Figure 1 (cartoon, rainbow, N blue to C red):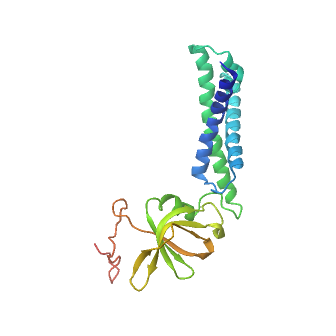
Figure 2: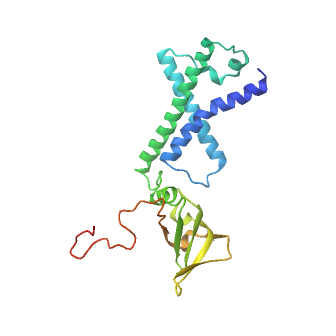
Figure 3: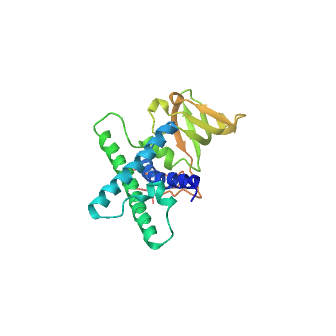
Length: 228
């Protein structure tokens, strides 16, 4: 097999377990979208290295095949037969599990560390709000100036400090208190600094959102009885 192809195979095979670990880490902890690419790559490679190390320790303990898939010589001289494939498949499967486990343990460690520090290592209510509830909805933004805009939330900083949660609103419409209507502006995108943001609300989408209380219905009657 040509050396160039071997090199590409080694990179893909060796790094992929790190992708899984990094995905698990991001799901559980969340990552600042402004994180430098280099830092993300280092974390990904780290999960892969830890994953193959964990497998190597287990392989030594239980007499499993060594992680041959990370050595170029394996692919240069391999012949397609059941014995050779099993020697590669078993270690690689173990590498995948190890990479996943390293991401999980790292996330749990970050959460544990957060309990004893002032910095949150996992998504806050803001993160969850932006990740889970904004997609596919119109939003209404109230600004400190008193202006109110409606539009689609294009970008929102998450996993970041309160004073760094800047927003980009697409097709902003300004609320007119006299006509009580939102009027589309000539702007395509509107950048809003977090310090100017007073409130944000997600507009109900009848076709996708499930509500217990219909819009406009009184939640509690006088006397404390729920309205049916």
